[in-house]
View 1 (cartoon, rainbow, N blue to C red):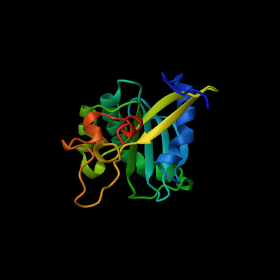
View 2 (cartoon, one colour):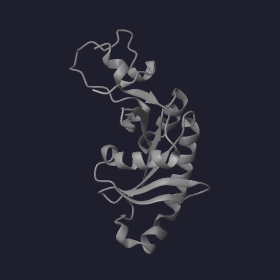
View 3 (cartoon, rainbow, N blue to C red):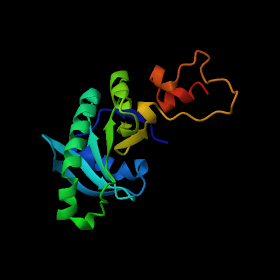
View 4 (cartoon, rainbow, N blue to C red):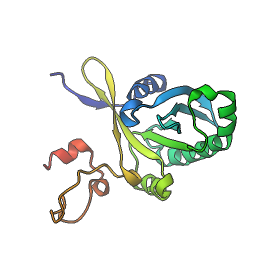
Length: 187
């Protein structure tokens, strides 16, 4: 088995190509209909249509851009929401459904506590967050994607009623900032 090691993300064009192929893992049935669409003031990396007809905007941030990415993503979602009726008229074959709204998926190497709190403050309108990691696997760089749960918290396994929490302090993986690999060391 080849050695695996974390590496810096590749050039943006290569990173986007790799992430595009992973989007179906995060949003099953997603159909990407556009890439690099100029939105409010910057490009939207991917525009997709979910099986229920809802538009999904996907934006990718660089390391350290997590809080900025949340703000940009919300601005882009608002911009697209205001123009969704026009999109339906111009391209009815896209499969967008009137009234389905616009969802937002943000991908970044990490989401700090401030960006998780900002996203989570939106409640049911919170954007979906996912972290990406670039791994050198001997043959090349592979991009791995890990969806985060509500309010940017890693999805934790459910436990039986009355079972002790994983940490006696009551801290969660999100509080400690542990990745799934780091958490598995404690199991």
